[in-house]
Amino acid sequence: MAGIFVEDVNFVSEGYTLKGRVYRPADEGKYPAVAVCHGYPGDNKNMDLAEELALSGVAVLIFYYRGAWGSEGEYRFTYLAPSTRDALKYLRSQPYVDVKRVGLVSHSMGAVPLTKIMSQDRGVKTGVLMSPASDIGAWSSAEALDAVVPVFMKMAEGKLSGWTEKRLREDVVEAAKSVNPMDNIIMVKAPLLVVVGSADTVTVPESCRLLYNAANEPKLWVDIKDADHSYTEHRLPLIDVVVGWLTAHLE
View 1: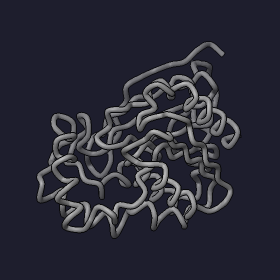
View 2 (view 1 turned 30 degrees about the vertical axis):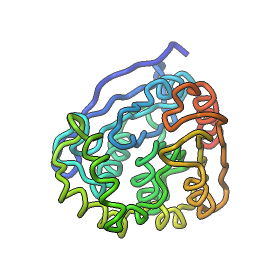
View 3 (view 1 turned 180 degrees about the vertical axis):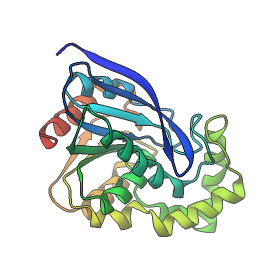
View 4 (view 1 turned 90 degrees about the vertical axis):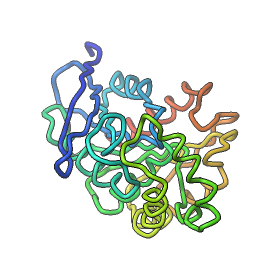
């Protein structure tokens, strides 16, 4: 293989231009491919993972949801799935992609669109959930919203467009009804990998285990010892696990 090719791309989703970056093998041909659903607000780009996947023969689209990181429009949890649907549509339209070998990868809040899309799109061959947000319903009570809304608003500064405290509160309640991973994962039929960090204090392993337990077989649980939410000091074991899973399940 002659290395990898990297390019910034744009695609349209419901009238809005979304930004992304493609990592793919440099040699001509058709390759398996994945789209990466970033977390909230998306600080962890997983570009090192994308590079290793491309070097291993898997094309990768890292994209930014509506209203996130310069993509047009306003950000909502309820808009994540449409953005992801259209990211997959864009990926499948590329001449270097084998449309029969397409998957999704998510980190944290990216579990929301991954589980929603995979519950509907049987053409997605496999999914990887890294430190998944499992139950949005747990955030939707008045007491929980009082605790999480200020944190979410602070995290969004300069990164997400269109948030106000009122809109965030309304969107959490709506997302809990329509795109809650705990509700959607039971309708996913494709193989799933769930990776967690034993030292994660954001999406703690116990909450991730509830989502994993609700998932259908085949599935695999991997707990990376001492890893935090972003796998800051544990990128290599994370990458090894994810690359191994995807190369095997996108054959």
